Length: 332
Image (cartoon, rainbow, N blue to C red; front, side, top):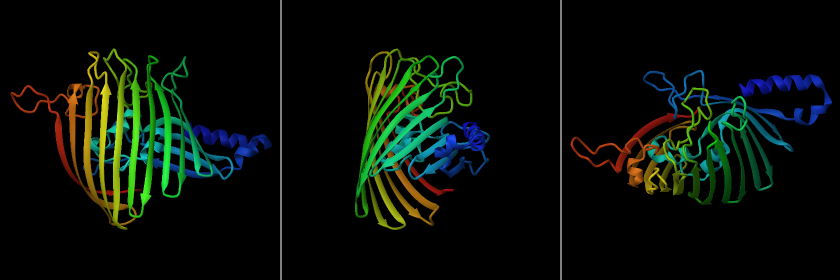
């Protein structure tokens, strides 16, 4: 809706005259519509199961060489843009190799995002409208980011905050970097995510604050929860069409529940990827995820096996899971 509104507004400004000539020099850079559809039943496949009428991404973009870039609509937030750049997978296909994304949310409705480069430095700012009557801050997400790229080295940092229906906040700060040495790319990043007591996004597709964003809640917890995640990895480009990736994520958690207990979650994964074409690839993936401390019983965690029984008659909750996957994908 925001993208359609902007297009109408732009048309109106064109008719008004020279006052808006600076912005009208910008040219349309991108109009993008994206969704994921399952092959078995054509249902939308995404982190929050949005219907076909509410796609993963719908936005328009404008670009000018001196003014920068402006994007409007449903799109990735700046935390996803920056931290994804310094993640070995950006975002994996499975919860086990992509769970860190849920700490900051990937896509946001009704978002304005501005990008401007100054030589090797790039700045980004984001404002996602909350659309809640009576208080413009409710359901809103704001943030800023800086990155620096010079030769084979890149580093970037981001700060982002979101507010729920009761003004509880999620505050995220992250820093990451990459270094390219021939066929090898090294990745390293750190994310700190703090969720206020009781922080909770609204149910998906409900129209409530933060409803259509894939971020974790802190429901039922009277304490402020903090996650500190380190991610490290390496990509080895064996050949132009063949890549091998190994990565490790470790989350140290404070105040998992109101009892003040701590916990830990970690995942080690390896992926072999073969590109059949520029758009299509096949991959084989293995992973091992471990939970410890309070995270084993964490009902606000992202791991679906947290708190699950090891088997019939066994009282202890599952603390590890191993996975193997093979996939074929086409990027549009």
